[in-house]
Length: 99
Image (cartoon, rainbow, N blue to C red):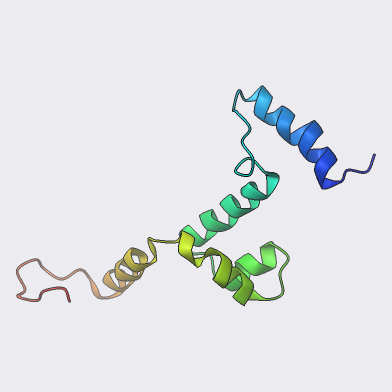
């Protein structure tokens, strides 16, 4: 049997919601929302935009960058932690203040 998006949503996806006792809400409950969840989760764990584009079947990493970067609010913290890991965290009493 061939599945198109509409048939898959009605027969499989919504049944999955019923089985899990989760209320299906459109558009947040769409199957495409799972794709966004996957992409934002990978980005939050520092998977590169290029890798993500490849995983999702896009040849243009810029499309992913424009679509998903707003979903990664922790990127500044990750950048600070990365630099701290290389150079060590400064002592609290070193006299330097954060900009």
